[in-house]
Image (tube, rainbow, N blue to C red; front, side):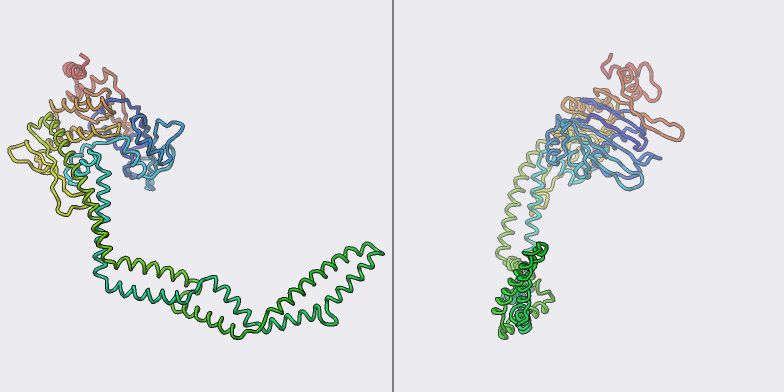
Amino acid sequence: MLLNLEIRNFVIVDQLELDFADGFGALTGETGAGKSILVDALSLVLGERSDSTLVRTGCDKAEIYARFSLRGSSTARQWLESEEMLDVATPDELLLRRIIDANGRGSRSWINGVSANLSQVRAVSEHLLDIHGQHAHQSLLRADAQRELLDDHAGLSSLASEVATGWRRWREADKALQTAAQCQKATEDERQQLEWQVRELETLAFDTNEWAEIESEQKRLAHAASLIEGCHFALDSLAESEVAVSRQIDAVASCLTGLAEFDEELTGPGRIVLSIQAELSEAISSLRRYSERVELDPQRQVEVEARIAAVENCARKYRLNPTDLPQQLQAWRDRLALLEAGTDLKALTERVEKLHTAYQRQAEQLSVARQKAAADLSTDVSKIMQQLALGNGHLEIVLHRLPEGNAQGLEQIEFLVSGLSATAAKPLVRVASGGELSRISLAIQVVTSRSAQVPTLVFDEVDVGIGGGVAEIVGRLLHELGQERQILCVTHLPQVAARANWQWLVSKQNTGDATRSTVQVLDDNQRIAEIARMLGGVETTDLSKQHASEMLGFA
């Protein structure tokens, strides 16, 4: 349930902090005092879109905080855990925060101190609170709103979403089949071209590792004569001529070794020369092994250069680097596989039939559930309608079968109303009286609220257009709902406010150039005065106070 709401610099509210109780609470006050501003603030902190005009004049930002208890909402707790937003320090509470900038840079939201987007805020809010606005009857005139209301009330939203997904997959597959049939000639031409290109590169049998190796081998073969000549020169200079370096190093090493016996300072240089002697010996051995291996091979050189030319010609043909050829081959193979699957009209036809069958199965399941839910909702709403002075008014939810179905299922849903006149049942959109339409909407909201899973319900002047005995019934219905969950109702009817468990008075004050809205928690005597005002207008009398006291049950 909603525990606390804090508002700062929002419209005509400078700063306001409200602690909510359970049961049924009423918000009353003069027209224009700002009762619905509180509901608007709640809507915004729950994820509604905002704009900078909502920031109080002269302020740089508006802030809204809402704190909820999670003890009656296990689904909200599960959502927070899945999003890693549950506050382990206070796991039984949830804090929502919204800041709206006055400079037009938008707004920011937080869930338990974690930055969140509006989609996340709306997702968790669905488990916390429902707001029924005074214009709800207007949305009920739309066919899609009627369908969504029925599905939500019956818990069929998830199945309806699956049906929509099934429809979309079936239609996409059917479109692919039609496209494949129409473009079969062009697809076949592309497939043949790809087959030829793939065969060409597969015949080339080239990979990037080979390219590095063959380039290195080509350099070696092209310079084989220079390599042999240079190797012989090095061996001659180092080991095989009369003045070879190795002989001179040997002589120096022998000299220093003998002299070190007379002066130890020569031991160090002698060791260095011995190290050079060893390194030189290893180099001479390596050169001899290399000279025995390297040889002129004109035939191999021709083969290697021909291979390089073939790879470069193929790469040039397709405007690629040689090293990109293997990747291009794989891309052509993938495209060819896709085309071959796409041109398999038999396989595509089988897929269409399979997806259509799956859609029909799910849609039929949804239809059966909707039929039962429509009958139950019609009965329950009709009972409330008759309590709201609608005579023999009866709501009938009709499911018109669609031959092919659509993304919403196999039927079109329409709310019909009968019993309000001598005429037969007619669509809700054609109900002549605005008052009748408002009461029908209220009946629907009361019934659907009873089945809602959220612990808090807000009714914003849904009792517009009614009065007298009907208003007393509305108050009783809301009071009964308050026995099961937290109810907050913005109302101008004393009969409704009198049935509340607690009552707040919203008023507007002018201080100089500024206007501010305040909220006062009413005690018993203040409630009598406020109910009397609602009954009698500006001036209250002893009679109106006595009447108010009787309505509140204080007499």
